[in-house]
Length: 226
Image (cartoon, rainbow, N blue to C red; front, top):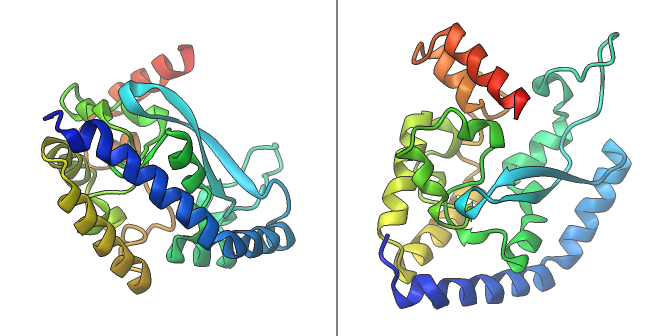
């Protein structure tokens, strides 16, 4: 990755200006959505989750809650697709659930444009080459999001991330931001065919027979023992 003036200073300046302005402009929307989430889904209104960021440093990512906390008879949470409500689907389709991430950007945990922050678990299933995507701040949107988002394979998503970090420029970021606006209005590629929520990398690799059940279980065991 080339350390240009834009990468070192301009990108962060743009993040601060755009996220700050967006928080001001969208504050009524954020408040309104927060009230709706509280009424329809209860507390907490904000869903926070640990994600790997720059150089795999863990941070708390914030989103509006889109799922209920329904459990089975044994006290375990029901599958995501059963807890995702119609209202939650609408929030995801319009990307309104991601508005709290503007605070992550202002804080410096994230950038406007960059590889999307994945689950910590997903890192364990990535190759050493794929992990190079962590060499930059994760983004609210990215090259993979404007080229298929969740409707493309994990392999393509990770490849787009690697392509992005090799050529970070102001004009490329601006292009991605403008394309993202169009995607949001069209509500395109919210999820993969036949799936209500995004599939974890490990589950995808197992389903596509790229790893065996034994390898999958071994990695999950290592994660639990960390």
